[in-house]
Image: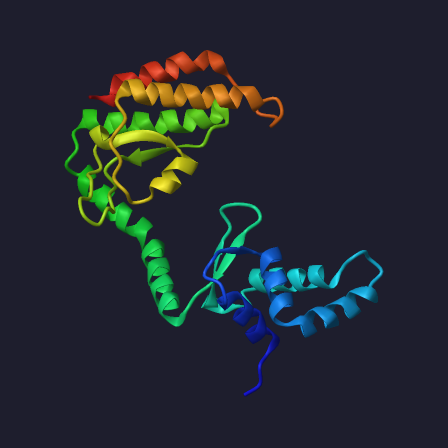
Length: 233
């Protein structure tokens, strides 16, 4: 059976269960297959631009990751820079594929739950939800902050799913909401919610000029007052 270059790349990655950056993966390839490094060094020497064999291997790995050349045999974490990868065993591949299907279907499940629960809401409760959503959008417009309306008890929590109801809503920064995912977190009291938003605005104000973001601090009190009016206990 012929061993392809892809097979060698994947074999080198499979020797560790850790997440590796592309550069670390390239070093691993060079350690396991020194002949590949020798060949890459020779090719790099012929190029006009300043490069090395190790950088050439890393570039090839990066290109194959971007084009899907490793298929489902690796998992990529692009949440940070530089991105990291890890090898997936056949069992892990099946589990990973099942999780991806579940994640792809999750938005549709959330829509169905929200539609079902919304039918039970009164006018005042729907107004409160609308205000949460409006305030979230306005925090983006006036402060450049990506707040999302979060269900403290997650709608898709496997054990104790929450309801789409204003008493279950809070505002979280997108990064924090992504970490929360389908977990249940204790809902902020309004005092905690206010402190959380004010802290985010304070941090944003410190770097606003460097990020070319215009911060409108005059509307802060108004938005927080509106939020308090609909927040509930």
